[in-house]
Amino acid sequence: MANETPYSQLPALAGTHLGESAWHEIDQDRVNLFADATGDHQWIHVDPERAAAGPFGGPIAHGYLTLSLAPVLLEEILIVADAAQIVNYGLGKVRFPAPVPVGARLRLSADCLSVEEVTGGYQVALALTFELEGQPKPACVAEILFRYYGAAATQAT
Image (cartoon, rainbow, N blue to C red; front, side):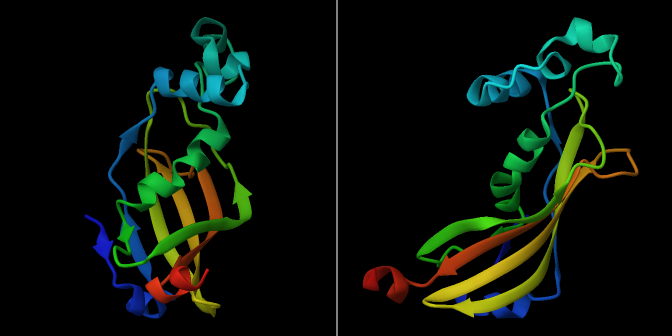
């Protein structure tokens, strides 16, 4: 269940654990759609027969597919419903410590590292960990920045 935080209370999140999303299965259809969207049709992702003989015993999801799930999974953890605008401001350090086998389930765990005032809003730095069900290593760890703007900031622009 998402933590609904009022825009004005964002600074109070600094240094806190925000929670986890539900578990989500990564199926071959999703991997294939991502390959089509990006043009990355490497056999380790899209050819289950060939991948079965490969280093992971089957196809794996693209690392960037895992990372691209951050915004949608984060909505299961944190909602700032009264923000007038939310901007994905970018990424810091990103690592892919473990592959995501097709059929695996993953979830997002999020911690708020900091909240800083910026013109018209707040910049929120989050530490994201994409956990693989039943596995000790995460699939992805990343630092991500979002900017949340109040109604007055969007009216001025």
